[in-house]
Amino acid sequence: VIGEDVLYLTVRELGEKIRTKALSPVELAEAYLERSEGLGAKLNAYATLTRERALDEARAAEKEIGVGKYRGPLHGIPYAAKDLLAAKGYPTTWGARPFANQRFDHDANVIRRLHAAGAVLIGKAAMIELAGGMGYRYGTASISGGAKNPWNETCWTCGSSSGSGAIVAAGLAAFAIGTETWGSIVCPSAYCGVSGLRPTFGRVGRSGAMALSYTMDKIGPMARSADDCGLILQALAAHDLHDRGSLPQGEAEFHYAHASEKPLRIGWLTNAWKDVDAEVRKLTDHASATLRSAGAHIGDAALPDGPWEAAAGVTISVEGASAFESLIESGRVSELVDPAGKIGGYINMTIPGTDYARAQRLRGIIQRKIDALFDSFDVIAAPSLPIVATSMDTNLETDLAFADPLGGIGNFCGLPALSVPSGFTSKGLPAGIQFVGRALDDHKVLAAANLFQSHDKSHRRHPSP
Amino acid sequence: MKTISRRSFARNTVVIATAAAMLPSDLFAEETTTAPPNAEVEARIQWIFTKYGARLNDAQRADIRRLIASGQASIDAMRAYALDNADDPATPFRIQRGGSAK
Image (cartoon, rainbow over all chains, first blue to last red):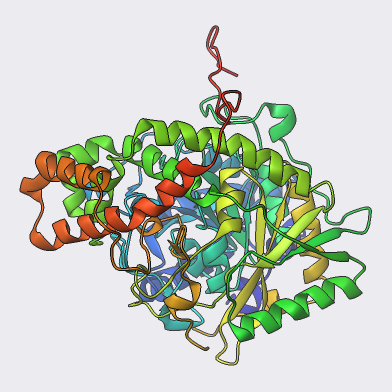
C-alpha cells in the first residue's frame, strides 16, 4: 500500500524511485486515483478523472522503464490538468455549464508534451467557470462547485486554477497544470501552500487551451516545490506552431538549472500591496531574512506608478468579451453559476475600441519601465497575497478587493512569477511569497525560489485532510 | 487571521478582487457607492439595456448600473495618461507568408 509518505514526495523524488524501479508507475497511479476518487470528490477538486487513460499511460511507462527506456524525471508521474485543456475523448467543460458536454478529438499542446515526457494524466482539475472571464463574485463559481482548501475545508482554494491547487495540496497527484491570466496560478498556489510557476508569456504553447485573453493567458505548473516546477517547465517549454503568441523555439525552450551561478539580487517591493496582514508580513520578513542569510543581496524596490492595472483589466475584459462573444450574444451566459458571470460579458462589450488600443500603447510603456527595474535586480519579490485563504462564502466584490499592481504589471508584461509557501499563520493556513523576473528569466525566479526552499521547509508541510 | 477590511485596501484608482483570473466586473468595483452619473456611463448602460434588456432582471440591471458607474474612474485614469503619437501598441501585427506566421 502506498501511503502519504510517498504520495507527498516531490516529482524529483518520485521520479528517482520510478527510475530505479523502487516504485511502480501503475501502483502509484492507482494510489492517486483512489485518493482522488475519495478525498478529491470531497474537496470538489476534479472535473473528471481519466482513470482509463491514466492506467494505460502508467502501464506503458512501466513497460518502457522495465526495458531500460527511461524518458526522464516525469516518466510515470501522475498529474492533473486544468479543465480548460483539451484531453482527447474526455469532457473539457471550461468549468462552465454551457460547455458541460464539450469534448475534443485531440489533446492540448501541453498534454501532448507531458505525454511525450511519459507523464500520466489522472484527471481534469476543477476550475472557476471560463477561468473567471465573465467575472465572479464567489468561490463557488464553477460547474463542479467551490473547491475546498485542504488546509481548512471551510476556506476556498482561490481561482481560477482552484482544483489544481487543491489537488497538489491534498496529495491527489504529484503535480497539476494551471493557467494564469491574472493571478490564477499565483493566488491558488499561495492559498493552498504549493509552489506555482507562471512562465514567461509565450514560453508554453496554448493550442488546445480555452482562450480568455489572447495576449495575457499563460500555462504553468503547480507542484510541491520550485524545483519540480523547473523540471515540468523544461518539458512544457517549446514553440507551438498553432499558437500565435508562442515564442520562437530559441526563446521558448528552457533548460533547467537548479541554482544561480551568482548571488541573486532581489528587489523587495515596497508598494506591491497597500496593506498586508500582520502574520503574512511577519512571514514575509522572515523569508527576506532567510534569503539574505543564504547569500542573496536584498534591496528595496518599487513598481512604477501608472494606470497599468486599468490597462491590463481593459485588455482582459475586451479580449474576453471577444473570445466569448457568441456565448454572450446567445444569452447562454445566464447558465453560468455566478451572478457576476451572468452580466459581466454585457458590461465588457461596452468598452470602446479606443480604450483597448490605448491599453496596448500603455503596455509598451510599462514594458520598458519594468524592464529597466531589472537592470538593478535579478528578481523582485513580495507577498503572493496580503492575506491567507478566506472562507468559501466570501463576497469577492464587497469583502475582498484590493489593488494588485504587481499582478497587473507582471501579467500585462508577460513576466515569469513563482509563488512558494513562506510559512503558516497561527490558524495553520499557508502564506506565500512570489518572485517575479524579467521576461525570459524564468531560470532566475526558479533560482530564487530554490534558494529559499533550500533553507526553509514550509513547502514540505502538508495538510491532513 | 485578522480580517482585513475592504476599506483598508480601497483606493481611488483600480480595485480588483483577489479572486484571480481577474474579474472584469470586479476590476471596476469601487469602495464608493456609485460615481455621479455622466453621459458616457449612461450611454453604456442604456446600450446594454436596449440590446439585452429583455434578458435582465431588476437586480441584474442594478448591478450593471453600479458596476459601470463605479468603474468609470479607472477608465478615466487610463485615458488621462499622456501618450505621444509615437507610442505604438505592444501587440504589433505580424505578416504571414506560407503556413506559419512565426
